[in-house]
Image (cartoon, rainbow, N blue to C red; front, side, top):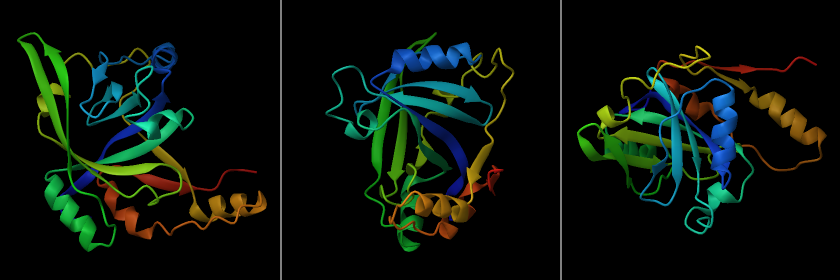
Length: 209
């Protein structure tokens, strides 16, 4: 485990410019979502709170692709995994020391309506370089206002979901499938990332044929 990195915080699901369709689909699956949030970076989101972690549906408003093109130009689906941190600056230093070359810490916020009036949820993010893994993005998130994210009444769902379980294809199987399809794209070894899971298990599996 790298210093200051505590485990998985949330999983990001990309909705692009089709957030209404995405929220409708997840609601029909039995999930309760937070009201729509508007980030200072130009993205929009809904959260599906699951106890200590959560899913984040993230996209852009219609016509807002220019500010977050990475969310608008890719198809809907898994966008990335965010790891929890007790210090974004400390995690940034640890990642840099481990050779990941992260860009500077990014401050992010979004308005939140509460019974006491409007508040602002604030976060510090460390985004790992886009080519760290071939399937999406990795980032580290320090919550500065946790009470505005983990709120009562949002963690129970009609379908009974309570936590995130990640099942990933083994790297060897992924490489075999890409080579069979004719791809010559190199895949970076992921051994340095395995210690980042904290209390959440990630088990590589080989699909049944």
